[in-house]
Image: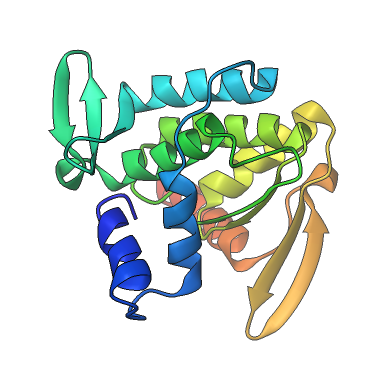
Length: 203
């Protein structure tokens, strides 16, 4: 998204071409809004500080070049050579900074674990939990046991409801991580691998 930001806007707004659907266009327009000063929600401001810690720097839009760049200390890097995980976190940070996101916003994240170190995934999910408690609603799609387990621990620690929907052979089941780990193929495979490890150890 950040790498193609200007291309998406130009193709839809100037060229009137339809190579990118409205979800990309809407996000590109949201990212185009300038950061706003003044006091933000305390949870949003704290989340931005934690996101910057995960990034190890900051992703900013350069008005002169019309491109995004990753800034780490005094060094600047083109967004094209920046890791995909950093770009994903930067999008959330930018939307919090320009106040596009509010306490009634809804965010969809497909595979939050993608292109991120497990430690960064855990930190990101902690931030998601804080933002969710402040009013933002998150929908996450994941194939990672690590993500499910972390969300389970958040539900247990905070005593909050985190509903989950699982699919298996076109059958859908629902559960709540507040009540325990759900039964699904991701959990089952993790348990199977653990049992396999135990069996190898006992041989």
